Image (cartoon, rainbow, N blue to C red; front, top):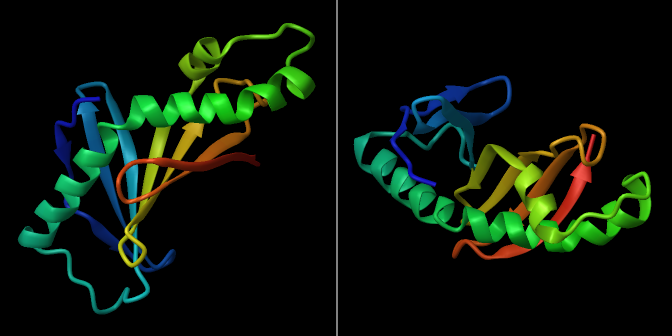
Length: 143
């Protein structure tokens, strides 16, 4: 994925986090949520905005690997319980996923990727835990 632009994060008091949009290309953007325990203290200024953009840009370069690892983790569940007796392979599963949001926890230096399931799990959302180096940790479905 090629990152084009990260809009300046805006503090969302209702959800106690910072919200932004990451433009991938002219017709595709994803939501970015930045979390910290120090909501009232952190100030997103020009210098740390650049640091956040750099970190997210680095992590998103791992997105293909993260998506494939997610498919590996959830494929058996799909083929056993959700597939209407039409098994698919990991590559087909992976192509169905569409990244919708990245949550970045500044305190833990960790990420969660949130995917649209491509109707594999009847519209449930897929979440993926990713470490600071962009390595897949775990995945599951919610909703």
